[in-house]
Image (cartoon, rainbow, N blue to C red; front, side):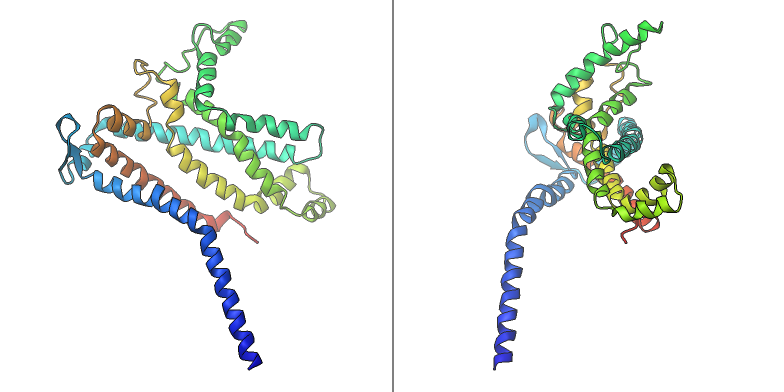
Length: 304
């Protein structure tokens, strides 16, 4: 009997722990369902409709929105703009953040102060960030052009030249996320045992060799996480473009992202059905990219 009683008590304890576990994750699950899963299905449903005249009611049109999307050059231009922004922002921000994290992980004076300074752009209001960078980029009295004039170079239309505007916007994105990436890398670096570096130094490995043969392999899980999350976030860029590019800007067509286009169709033109179709396209692109990232994960990410 005593053995059975112990088994019953153990089972009851496990059930209680399981219920407490479910209770703890319940708010997150509810938030995921309400804020993510339900809106996804609503968006898919909305993509088969168009808004009626004067914004009244929805009219079922089947696949017409998807057919229009295929032949819409502005959508594919927005896809290319989004990809260009991502290809610039993600790798550069990750490389700079990783190098900063390695430097600030060492013993040095004012280390905490430097970490705080680099993280500040992440918590700054996007509107304030856009205002500051618009002043820096101003073609007439901006600081960057003033510095160029000192060296005898002419003014550059940083955000009104269609050829370079998207890259100028990407620089703002890089500046904004470096601190966040750096904190994640710092957390990963502090989990690496010092014994590996001591063994590498005994074997005669230089600092550069230690970085590529010890730091990068052991930091690969964190690097993979940062890469996946940054790609997803970069593909959804909107606020920087919205606040830096005026409607009269000649470079707007060369910089507007898919999310910007969705906002324009859904909330400016009132065509929520077509806007939802654009979001579905973005979702499919992100899913494909994430699938390939997970497929390649086994080839370069080391968890042991």
